[in-house]
Length: 122
Image 1 (cartoon, rainbow, N blue to C red):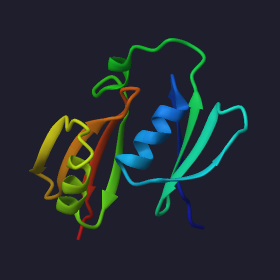
Image 2 (cartoon, rainbow, N blue to C red):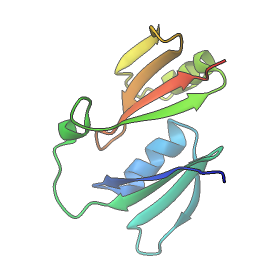
Image 3 (cartoon, one colour):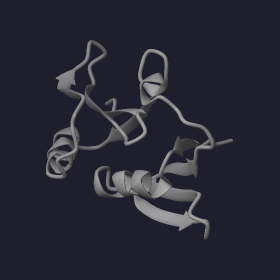
């Protein structure tokens, strides 16, 4: 039986977070609650729910090694990096080849979630 993954992130401002996922990472908005407290975005088979947080959170607690690394695999890592650079969003770790053979770069979303964009294994 197949399995898929959908994650939810908790944002101080779901609209700003959804704008990041759309403008910077190329996701599309799939739906939103009328009250604006939940936005669902997707790209390919990736689905991310963006919920309103109910408490103040220090964004650094979401960074590795204490937080979670959200890994997004793409077909053309160089093109993805070039496209993201045009948005002006800061890159936390530039493109590099890892010891396990994949190439990746990293960035943070507006709420401090740590994202690794990586090439696909061959």
